[in-house]
Length: 120
Image 1 (cartoon, rainbow, N blue to C red):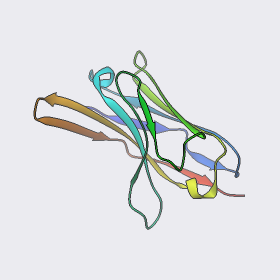
Image 2 (cartoon, rainbow, N blue to C red; image 1 turned 120 degrees about the vertical axis):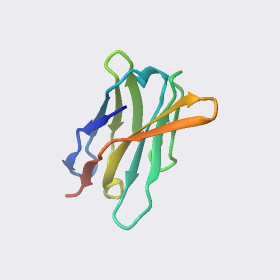
Image 3 (tube, rainbow, N blue to C red; image 1 turned 180 degrees about the vertical axis):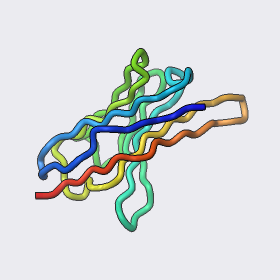
Image 4 (cartoon, one colour; image 1 turned 45 degrees about the vertical axis):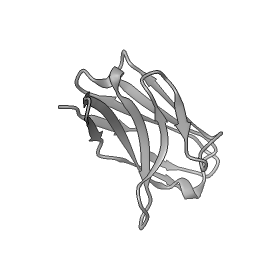
């Protein structure tokens, strides 16, 4: 079983920065695609950024140039560095791990979420 635990959320002023962390348990981290999603009140959960096991990254258009996803396989941790934060970045941020356990099965794991609030 895999557990994901996020931290680093909080209240920040517009233009500020936060760094989210997600620590994984278990042995599959280095073979997983990791991602950050977010969900604002009244909206659907949306993909923010992904990083493959080969360190290829992808970002939502709304965060390109402001957010950076990275991973440390030795620490089983994925990070989301968020700069130039805007009020519209306010949401609960979720860590996600996708692991292909068999040729036909993709296992999907989620953290409990961490609140990010951008407000003056």
